[in-house]
Length: 316
Image (cartoon, helix red, strand yellow):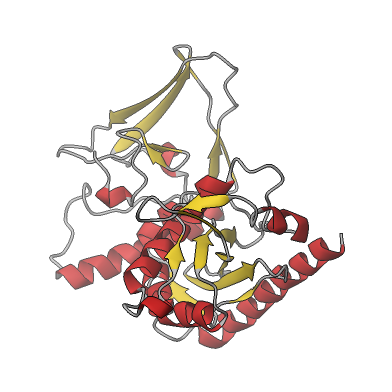
C-alpha cells in the first residue's frame, strides 16, 4: 500500500504540474504530441545511457481528460504513443555501440500475459524484470533493465496537452521523469485517437471559399477542436445523430438494431452476450454525393486487416 501511495503521489504531482504548465504556456505555439515527443528523444536516450540502462521496453501511456480519471483505455492513443516512442527510440539510437539501447519489441503486448505484472505498484513492477523479452530486431531475448511509459494531461480547453515520459528500472525505485515535461497542441488525428467525437464541415455543404493547403489544414484543426468541446458539453449533437454527416453507423446484434445511448459526449451500446453475432453497418447518407473513405475501428484495430496505424493511413 505504501508503494501504491507513492505511485499515486507521483502521478498526481505530474498532473498538478501539468495544470500549472497549462496556464503558463497556453500562448506558446507548439507542435502535435508526436512531433513534440520526437524532439525529446535525444534527452530520453541520454537519460538511459547515463544510468546504463541497456535493455528497455515502452509500455502503454495513461491519459487524463478533464473531469475524468487517469485511464489506460481512452482510445487508440494509449497504445499508439507507446508504439511511436518505441520507433523513435530505434531510429534515434546512437551509432556508437557503447551507447546503443536495446529496444524490447512491443513491450505492452509481451507483458500482458505476465501474472501480477503492473507498473503502477512496486510489486507489479518487480514482476516485469523476471522474464526475457524479444527485441525489436534479431532473435535475441533479454531481461529488461528498465521500462518507459507516460502520462498525458489534456487541458481544460481540449486544445492543448502536457506529457510526462516516465521511467522505472530493475533497482526497484519509483517512476521518475526521463525528460522535461512536454507541451503540445491537439490536432484532429489526436482527437480521434483520444476517442473524442466531431464532424468537420466543408466537404459536403458546398460554397466553401478557396483556401491554400496550409489555411485548409489550420481551419480543419480549429473546427475539430471547437466541435469536440461543443459535442462534449452538449452544445452540438453527437456525430451519429447529426443528419448532415455523410456516413451513418448502425449496430446489430443477431440481426436486430441496437439502441445507442449518448451521454457526456460519448456513445454507448449494451455489451453483447456471449455467442451473439455483432454487425456494424456503414451507410452513405444523401449528402455523400462523392466517394467517401471510411475507417471502422474496434478496440483501436481497423476492421480491414486489423491495422492499428493512423486512420488516414489505414485501408478504406
